[in-house]
Amino acid sequence: MADASTPPMVCLGNMTIDDVVLPDGTRRPGCIGGDALYAALAARPWCPGVEIVAPVGDDVPAAILDGLTRAGFSAEGLPVRPGKTLHNQVVYDAEGGRVWTLYNDPADFDSQSPMAADLPQHYRSPRRALISAMALASQEDLVDHFTRTGETFVALDPQEDYIKGNEDRLRSMIAKVDAFLPSEDEVTQLTGLTDWAKAARLFAALGPRIVVIKRGAAGVLLHDAENDTDYHVPPAPGAAVVDTTGAGDSFCGAFTAALDVHPPQIAAMAGAVAASFTVAGYGATPLLSAPTSDISQRFEDWRARMTFRQGADGFHLVGGAA
Image 1 (cartoon, rainbow, N blue to C red):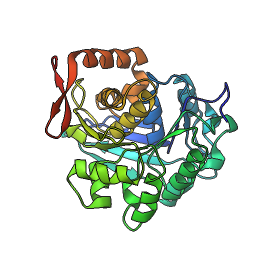
Image 2 (image 1 turned 120 degrees about the vertical axis):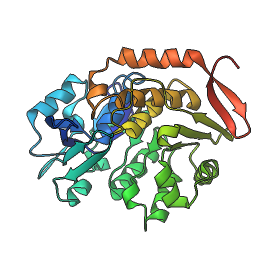
Image 3 (image 1 turned 135 degrees about the horizontal axis):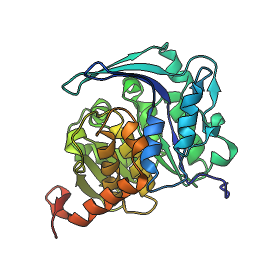
Image 4 (image 1 turned 30 degrees about the vertical axis):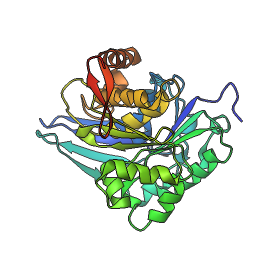
């Protein structure tokens, strides 16, 4: 049961240390990353007090923990596991591509995915929980925990690597959550479809009231099952795209948080705005350095200029008055 110390939203996933190599050869070792961090940073403008749950290894540098504290997050949600924190090298090229190298044993990804037992007592019944991509067993455990009482709105972002061979387990999870937030690739793996509206309705028929298919540079398709309505939201305007790492995680965090105060189609605009900050630089740096007021202002400015206009395939976000 929630009390005054319960965070309004909890973002659950992985925490990573990323050694970044920029196109000019500049090296930035020891950068903080991970889907839980991107999501929580993006959620802050719409959900102050959002917290993270993401295990770390017993080698986690004090500077990483200090950085999280400066960003407003508690170390309570960072349970320490024996072994090394998930650690990557990320090498960027001049065309915007990147190559990831995981220094850890791949099994560490599973052991450093959170379980319900990792939740601090006062994190156990937030208004909203975003379960980011992680080990399948961890997602199942967390979905079961947060959906047990019906007190928490649960959003699920799947992990593409586990889908093949586990389709029935994933469908069982989808049936329990309030919002399902897959990428195009994950949709195709699970359904064989590239008709995104049809796929969204297949997912909604399992149980979630909101389905958002993340389409990269094409934006997102949102299906509001309660109104049987589709909304098409393009990427938000912003600086030139430098690095798309974390864009989907940022969308999911801001979208889930904004649902607390906006209808789904407007929350999708919030997600797009958060992602527009993420892609403007390398790693989590743009979100860590951007004042939440700047993110909020870009959202309000964009919202004031745009409107949803009905078309044959649903409502499209366009400029100008209806």
